[in-house]
Length: 132
Image 1 (cartoon, rainbow, N blue to C red):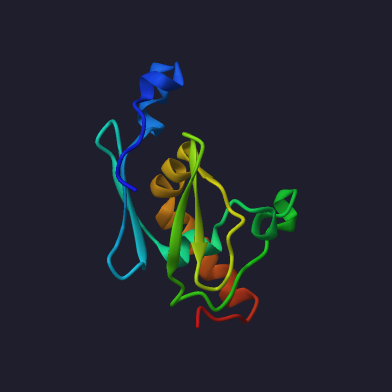
Image 2: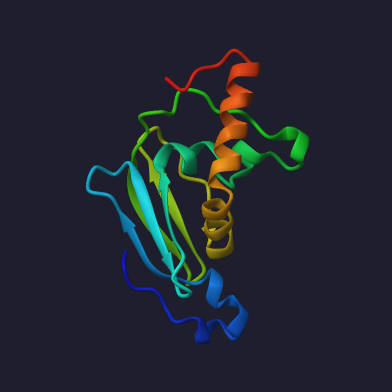
């Protein structure tokens, strides 16, 4: 999946910073690299995308319902499906496929990757869980 519509079709020039110009799955399917129209580029590990999935299964319906998902260190992305012109839906090899990653979500995940993944590792430790 390398071609995406231009931000002009979204009708808002401010969305250019959240509009990807390229989305590329690594050959080993362990990471997704997203490049945005403004030049920002993020490589997001499949594990990170899986454990921070925007799905209700992971996020719940309120912040206190978020689930810490263990055992995903080796998870891979089997497939990527477009959702209209505004998002992608990855299918992970553990069967998870309900997360819809809108362009602003991917941008935020890229910008906050270090903090979010650190918080995830801390939550695993506090709950006695493992990445493996």
